[in-house]
Image (cartoon, rainbow, N blue to C red; front, side, top):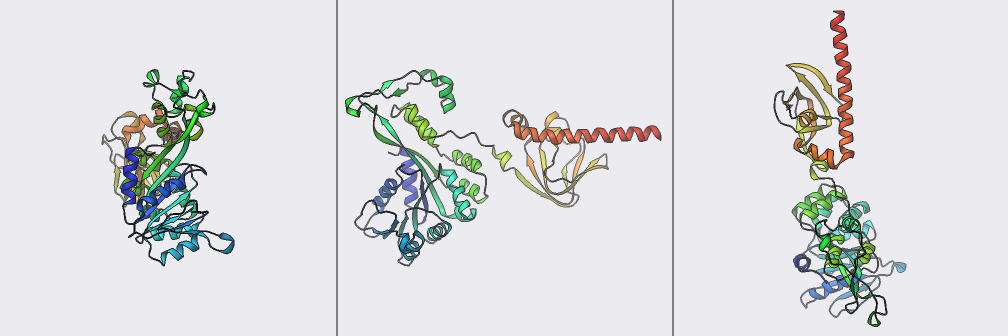
Length: 397
């Protein structure tokens, strides 16, 4: 079953008068059972509920259920269009398979209907990516989706024969997601086998749930069309627990085994931090100062559009014209005052990165640091060539 926090979020989301609520997971992960449980809780005399299913797995009294038949033209999209003419309160679409069905479901969700549906995706953040891939614009998803629930079913250890096991390598446990501090005192149970469980060591199943509520911050991230890993990071900050973390909790509580969680969940690598994926974007007008010579700030920048002028001692000494080029990183590396000013040449757009994070970038994100230092190396090489030219010119003069 759901833990208390997830259950409260689900109750909050289904109590709203409109919105799109998605349940995702592979075939056999219990998506239909979850949706049926929610519909059953909403099934009251004054609430009109319509469903389009393929096939209908359970008949409810008081709910109008339609069995989709694509061979005769009764698709999910056709059923949805017919539903909207009947003024329902709640709609369930068995599965969103194409752009047409997705568009109608979102239209229904934004016009006063509570809409439920399923998708076959690996986790909650990837569901948003899948909807975008289908063709739904980010702004429509941000305004219509209220919740994405990803789930798995894992076998439960038999209560009559489960035993403590000690054969797991601490490094493997740490790679799995357990903290180094908790591993020495971690009690892990595993299967043994008895007549009650037919010698399998398992009896019954338990759910693993990853619930992404579309809060204001998550909605902003979706609307901005951020990458999937950044959306995941935002959702985690807003309280989402991953499927793997849910599984680790089941292991700690002795509900299931390490093997079951490894089979049903994956660990996601840490996403790039917000200051790298979505840094502040700034616009400057002609001759407007971006960096002032002598200042002690340490932020560095990346040119997105336009061109910049480098000024030292009141004289123009260089230009920055290549989009994607970093500048201002010397102060972040040395901590010394700025050696030159940077001005916008006409209108320009730059991205600002926090200089106090440079050490973290070098340590944790070597691919990003490599690109940054390649740019720095190129600039230093060019500076050396210019210096040699000046020296030769002075000698000749």
